[in-house]
Figure 1 (cartoon, helix red, strand yellow):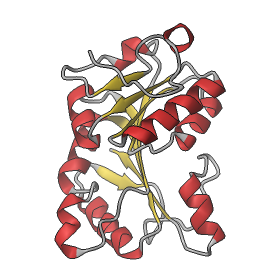
Figure 2: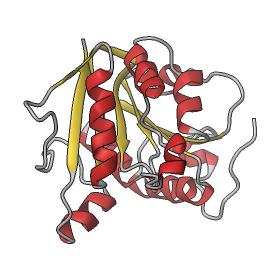
Figure 3: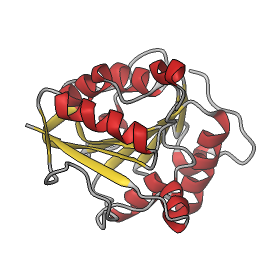
Length: 212
């Protein structure tokens, strides 16, 4: 299996040789690798700030972050080494491919989708991450009562997200009407994007849906 080779990546003696998986071709048993703890997955994890903070807050859980940007995954790996975390793994790959290849039915306690690229031009909407097919795959992989959390600042994309979440079979909003919250979620770390956009006065919408 190929590994990332980036400057300052954590050495094997610190995290083991599978901290970062580079586009694994076969399914990986993350539950076994992470001690059988309840698993959560962050799609498009960026530089790993949210993932690292959440792993510190909830050491009883294990986390997998996926991003297809080489530099972002390298930055996340360096952050995990600095924090000394052993309950996180990273995957350099496509988000939906990682979800569907490595996680079976009812295998995830939570899925986080925070500030994915909004692809604002209409001709680019086909590249958006939050789709009916992705949400169906998420629902299948959540345990009963498991949660999918989506957040964004882009107003038009938020309307797109809201429509697809409302239409997703087997997912029910945990928030009252209108189905999202503009308030910071106290049980979740704030991403660097959230901090930046809130400081600029841009509203952030959080959607929280659970599997029935």
